[in-house]
Image 1: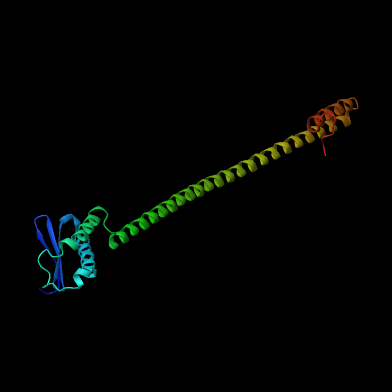
Image 2: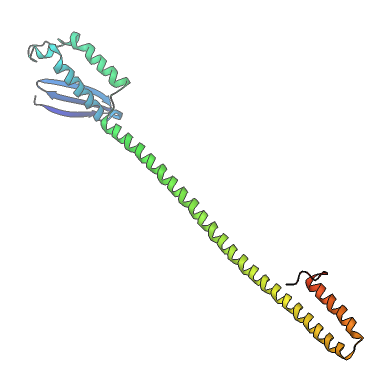
Length: 200
């Protein structure tokens, strides 16, 4: 038999074997086990068998059927137990697991960045709204200041006009001078206060 490595399928069972150096290493596994794990088992079995002292001292023709059952049987049983209970980590599965972990971390990082971006967008929108409100407030304050300025100027102009008319009338009437002073005082008291000390 030449050196080969094959799998035969029968119903839900897979028969995997490695033929090498006149020895055939065979294992039967469920279809769910795939191919990598059974062949990893066979490679371990072959390595342990070829490193055993009983196999190196004789050729395959010198060993009777079941001749190594007593010396190598416990090694096979221990290896089967190991692969059935706690199989060694398959390098491809381990790499896939690490890749999935890295992918999960990257997805979390992207989500955090997107959340930050949304919060920054919200802050920018609020800043724009506040800037618009501040501009509207400045315009309103400027309009009110102008309206008050004009109102003060109208009152001052009206007071001056009343004062001039009163002066004109007083020049003709000496008796009315006293009334004019009193009227002028009342007008100035309205603008400057009763003590006339708020006028500059």
